[in-house]
Structures are given as C-alpha cells and as structure tokens.
Length: 362
Image: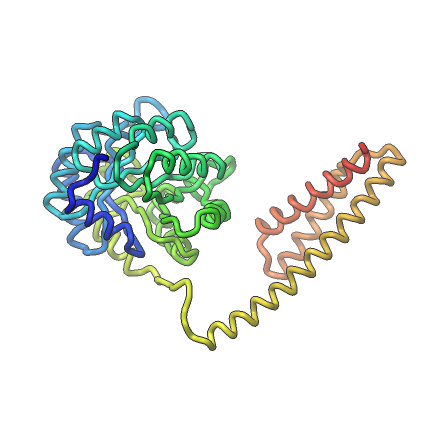
C-alpha cells in the first residue's frame, strides 16, 4: 500500500479529526510566488488547517484558464515545506491522482464535474487502490443524491477509509442569488445517510461572490457542518479564475472570527428538559398535520370520482391559481415565506393529482 510519510500521515490525521476544519487557498495555482505567498499569509493567520489549490481546473467552456497543470505541484510542495500546512488538490483522472501523490499531496478531492460522471469517478477510484490517503467528494453539479452516494461507494470500495463530503451547491434553472443553489435539504439528507462522515461546506462555489460568503458559512455551521472550504488569494481581484469569490487571507481570518460557533449538544439538564418539551409540541403538531393531509387526500380522491363520472380533466388551472393566491395572502399574514409555501403546495398538489389519476384510470 502506498502511504504518506509518517510525519505527513500523522499531521493530516490530526487535521482530519479536528472540528471545525478550515481548508483554504487559491482557486488556482498561478505562479510559484502567488502560491507560496498566499500560503504563507494563510499560515500566519493561524486559522487554516489545510492548504488547497486548483492545479487542474475543469471549466464550463473551452478557452478559459484550465489550470497550470502538474508543473504547479512543486509550488504546492514548496508551500507545504515553508508553512507546515498539509495540502489538498482536486483530481479528475487516474494520471492526476498519480501526479499528486508523486509530489506528496496529503489529501485529494473529487470535484462536482467529476462526481456527476460514474466513469470518471471509477477511474479515480481505481487509481486510489492501495493508497492510504483521505478523499473528499463534492456533490455533483445536478441535484442527484444517488450520484453523490455512488461516488462515495466507489471510492470506499477502492479501500479508502477516510472519506469526507463537500457541499458546494447545485446548478438550478432560474437561480439568481447564488452561483450554485445551496439546496440545504439535500446536504442534510446526505449527512443523515452517512452519520459520522466529515461534511465540509464550500461557500465560495455556492456564492460566486465574496459579499455573501459569511452568511452562507454561518448557516453551514448552524447546520452542524464540520468545517469550511473557502478560496483565498493574496490579490483576489487579479486572480486568473473565479476572482469575485475569493478573499484575502486577512479577510478570511476576519470571517472565521465573525462566525458564531455553536455546539450540537450541551449537557445542561434544564436545557434538555426545555428542548424536549418544545419538541414534543412539534411532534403533536406533526401528527395533526399528517391526519389533516390524509383527510385532504381522501377528499381529493372523491373529487377525482366526480371528475371521472363527468369526463372532466384532472388539472383545473383556474382552481390552482385560486389556491395559490389565497395561500400567499394567508402566508404573508402568518409570516411564512412564499418560497416555502410554494414548495409545500406543489408537493400537495402533485400528490392530489396522483391520487385523482389513480381514481380516474383504475
């Protein structure tokens, strides 16, 4: 089995077990001076645990800067030597895995554009056989938990025991606020499926701009993520890739200090007693909601019978618009967001349509 040096292995294991874990560095390694200077500034903050850098950059369109390539790996190695920070890079092919290991990279990550392709993930996994190194796996570009889970399984079957997840958001049509919509519920579900597995949030790729990085980072920590991966560059505005989402090492340190770090649990009996009481109230309300939803579906089925007997279509657009308008008006008064109400009503509406379809066609 190929292994890291004992010193590197001990250091990365220590960082792997640390909470919260902070990974930072430039989107792309551009020059040796840029790489080393940025790394030294990050190390000086005392806030960063692992140094990242993009060596190979899979881009959406050809002609964009696609990374400096393997010649940047010695720069990263030199930065590690000068700062003592373990390093991590993204890999997408078996050759990239071998190149990274040749230059003593301590941890690898599989990017979103690779996770989406099982063939590519399998190639990386095959190259990892016999290697003792931690691997992080980003969510796929599209919101598909099975692809994400499949990538985890392929890497695990290659014999990798230390696997972590990176939540970097998902491509979403109509999304305007974020570069990649967070879709927090998918990350939460992935955490639920993989209890105890390291889960890192990547605000840089979710936001696409630095002015909202802090808000997303705070939300991730509030949701009990294990750490953050944030891109940092010594001169972000002159970065060769993704300039708008990178911050200086000094600003990164400020962001980390501004975050309110909260515990998942506390030992106070008074706290737990109060929390249990409130949770029990939620349990009762949830039970009532389930009963009401079941009643609603039974009524929907009766409506389906009337429609069937009178040869009327299932979808009644005017009626649906009336429900939406009435619900939005009510939601505004009750302090419920329209986004939430829309998602809820869409789910209820589709279930009602399915019930009526069964009645009309069986």
